[in-house]
Length: 470
Ligand SMILES: Cc1cc2nc3c(=O)[nH]c(=O)nc-3n(C[C@H](O)[C@H](O)[C@H](O)COP(=O)(O)OP(=O)(O)OC[C@H]3O[C@@H](n4cnc5c(N)ncnc54)[C@H](O)[C@@H]3O)c2cc1C
Image (cartoon, rainbow, N blue to C red; front, top):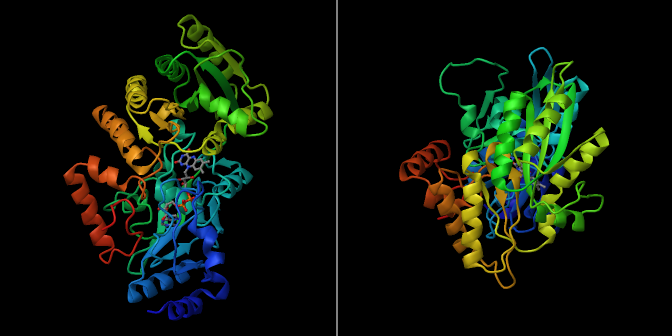
């Protein structure tokens, strides 16, 4: 169907303010947060309801128009940007941002998929509950994007990935039918758990329009602390000690290489390193308790004494106010922004068993320094989950796609040998689709393709994402 006809049919469904057809006005929807993915689309469509979304999808089926579902565009794998050929439409959920209901006794909240994550967290706080999902893009990413990437973040060690925080879903399926699975149940073994198929599917199996999210009691006590650690092995030993001391009270455990702190302090105003000295690594951790009368500080101080004696930590500071805690988290969450300012890099989002993290880092760094002399390591991430953002900065003259391919082989071969994953929390998108096909077993790829074919036989939903194009 010619584009002007398509635009007018779309406008009939969602109204004039729901359709953007002008190239310049579409531009913000074509770019990714890091500006390294962009494409062209026939139109950007912004439905205001589930019914409108379903009608848009039915029109796309009729006209065989491929769809790129889009949230806040903070994803880092090129999954929410259209391709360059301009054949797709972007369906943005940004106008669907109603908190539909909160059931305090059931600890659930039903939301539109276009709600901003920070707004969901605030709405939970307003009723004395916690929605624990959080990370640096909390003010821009949308719940539908979080669910579609099965986002992780800083609290996974205590509360799990997004998958663990979703109780029900509403999805517009690739044929335009609406699946109402908005159940707030703790137990439901009535057949397959269909919502799990859409969580982490990166928009390849339908458009999520609503979700039932799980809420938790708010912590009454919280401690944030920053430690100097001499090595990744020491950090793992420190993690083991902290888990022994705090069990499920451990909320976050982040590993940060010294260079990440230095670069962040250099580029991001208002950030600082609270510890003097020249420690090569740091740990930012948070413990919290929902019980009054817990002695978090006593326990942490006792662990610190033991950690010092065992040379797991060499220094540490406990945030003495919520402002100090916020400053520490601000520094940690500014690392991706600071990394962006440093120029070309080889980005990886890997996980290995926690016990294998030191071996991974030693071997990956040696491999890269051999292949790319002058490569500067830049590593941070969620050590409590065995998840590292291993993002070395490219030396001058390096960083083209061929170099990335060589780096990927070094890093991902090692990850695979250590029993890890080439995508821990960011997903696959376009960035890692070839890598996924290379490393996933043929049987897993076959099962995934069978699912895709069953749900989306016309391959209209986010084609070329997760599965390599063509
Ligand atoms: C500074 C910064 C820090 C970050 N830290 C973390 C982190 O710690 N942990 C982490 O996991 N991620 C992190 N991210 C990555 C990113 O924020 C997450 O992947 C986030 O969940 C993406 O949400 P979004 O709304 O921006 O989705 P988008 O980027 O718009 O889309 C992501 C994917 O979801 C699909 N999609 C979006 N909405 C829908 C929908 N309604 N239905 C179906 N498919 C949909 C898109 O097609 C695409 O495949 C970070 C990003 C930045 C910029």
